[in-house]
Image (cartoon, rainbow, N blue to C red; front, side, top):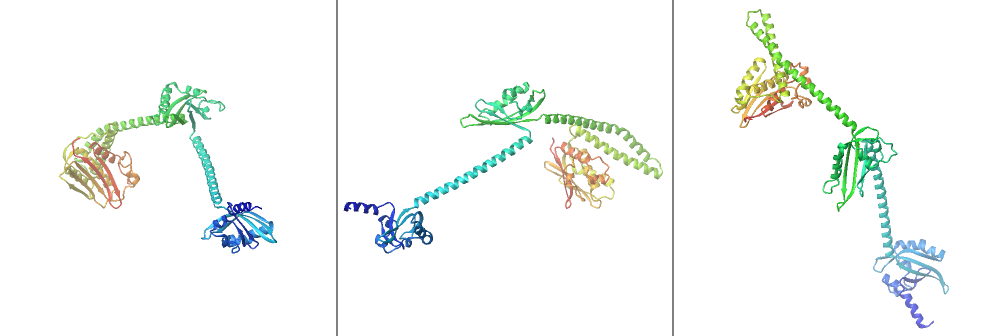
Length: 513
C-alpha cells in the first residue's frame, strides 16, 4: 500500500461524519477517530487504553450495556441502531445511535463500533409524536363534533316534527324555493310526488300572493336584515284550503350575493279556526255582560221609586203613636230600606262606571277636613260603641267632588268597621298639601291575604273572610272607591300586614282638571 493511500484512508477514518472506535472485549478503547473525540470533548490519548466505552455512558445506559447490549453482541455478533446516551466531558449528555460488530484481530476479540448523533432524530421523533397526538386529538374532536351534529340534527328533527314545521330553502343560483318531503300533505298530494316551487306558489290564494311575493323580495334585499314572514291561504289539490305561516332568513356574502335562504312552513289552520271561535265566544260573552249590566242599571233605577215610597211610609209610621213592638218593626223597615238604598246606589254607580266610561264628578273648591268630619259623625251614630278617630293634617283646602269624597270615606270606613278588630279603633286621616290631598283609613285585625289584595278593587269580588262574616254587600264598595279616585285623576292603594294593620290610601291632585 502506497503512503498516499494510507494517508487518504487515515483521513477518511479521522474525519468520518460519524464516530468510529474499536474496543477490546471488556470495552477498553483501542482506536478512536477525531469525530468521536470532538463530540465528547476528549483527546484520543485520553481515551485510548485509558477508558472503556461503558465509562462514557450514563448510569442507565451502563446498566443497559451490561444486561442487554453486550450479551446481545456476544450472541449475535452484531447490533444495529441501539439508542444510548454518552456523557460529554462537561457533563451534558449526547443521544446517539450505535452500530457494532464483534470480530477477532490477532487472536483477540474486538468490537468495531460506529456512533451516530441522534439529537436531530430525537427532535424529529418528538415532533412526529406530537403531530401524531395532535392528529389524534383533532380526529377525536371531529368525531365528537360529528356526534354532536348528529345529535343536534336529531333534536332539531324532533322539534320540527313536534311543532309540525316543514323546512324549505332557496337554491341560490336560480333563487328558487325548494321544499322538503312532507309539504305534499299541505297540497293534498301523495308523498311520492315531488313538489315543485312553481306548483306550490300557484296554490297560494291570489289575494295573498302579492303580499307573500313582497315579503320574499324584501328579504332578498342585502340592505335589509333578511327576515321573511308571510301568512297566506294555500289551496290543495284535494280542494281543502289551509292557513300557512312561513318564516325564513336570507344570508348574504361580503359582496352582497345570496349565500343562503332557509325557512319553515307551519299549518296554522286549526289555530286560526280556534281563534275565530274564541273571538266569537268573547263577543257573545261581552254582549251578554253588557246586557246584564244594562239590566242591573235599569232595575236599580226602577227600584228607587217603590223603595222611596216604602221609606216615606216608614217615616210617617215612625212619627205616629204606635206601640213599642210596632215601633221596633218600623225601625227594622227603615234600616232595611237604608241598606237597600245603599246597595242600589252602588249598583247604579257600578253601571255608570262600566257603561258610561267612568263616574261623573263635579269638582269644586272644598274643605276636606269638614267633609271627613261630617262623615265621621254619621259613622259614629251608625256604629255605636265603636272607636272612630279623625286625624287632620294641613289646612284642609282642596278641590274635588265633596259628595263623592264623602262616599269614599264612607265605603272605606264601613269596610274597616266590618272586617277590622271590634276592640280596636279605626283611624280616618285627611291631609292636604300644595298640589295634592289624601285620605287614609286604618284598622287593626287579621291582615288581608295576598291573593285577595291582588284583585281587591275589582267589582263583584269578595274575599272568603267577607263571605264568612256575612257581609251584606255585593262587592262594589272598593271598586267604586277606585272609580272615584280615577275620576279625580288620583289613585287608591292598600297595605295590610299583621304588624302594621290595614291601611287604604287615596291620593288626589288638588288642581282643577
